[in-house]
Image (cartoon, rainbow, N blue to C red; front, side, top):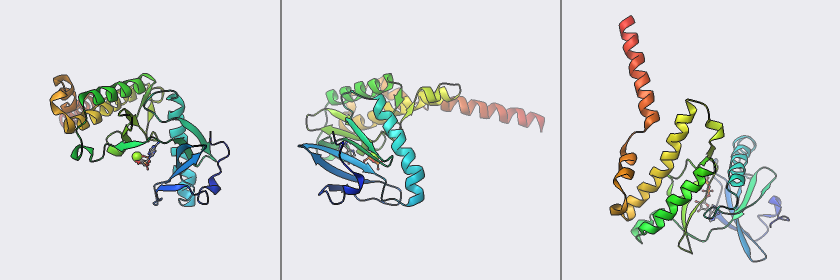
Length: 224
Ligand SMILES: Nc1ncnc2c1ncn2[C@@H]1O[C@H](COP(=O)(O)OP(=O)(O)O)[C@@H](O)[C@H]1O
Ligand SMILES: [Mg+2]
């Protein structure tokens, strides 16, 4: 799919622009081929230095995440990378979570599916790390949850050694907490008390770091 698509042809191709670029954000195009629509995240019109450093890095990171997530329901299909600067993925038709609670109330079922999806992502050795941004979670036209924007995702293998492994656990919990935050806006009664506890607790990693700091301080005070 989209094999013949050229980056330079995007502006002339009658592609819709979903979002214009800013100094740090890519252009988001909507393209169509043989009746199939795709979204292109494209850094090619960002400044020279930015696109060739951060832009390429983010496209590389996001591609890596999509490869790991291949075939997972709830994640857009990955089509291809163009020149290391743009990414083509399946368009998810639907609504983002941003402000959605003012219009409709999502069910407990929706959040159960969303948590299953996050769990499946974690089982593939990946944490999303940017679910706190409500525009990154969508409700598809089919009523099912979808997660987009994988450029901040990290892999378990990158964080496998202590103490990074503790930080990784924290990222996994943060992914869940972002979902709980949304669930609290829609159907707070369906959030269980262990979920609430974890949502409010400050996490092992943070406690560990605070403990180390307090001990170091005590030692320093004794020496001084
Ligand atoms: N696969 C997709 N399907 C539908 N809309 C998308 C898709 N990918 C991106 N978008 C739209 O483009 C916006 C920006 O894309 P995103 O990947 O989140 O980039 P950014 O890193 O700039 O936030 C999203 O908030 C969403 O509105
Ligand atoms: Mg985003």
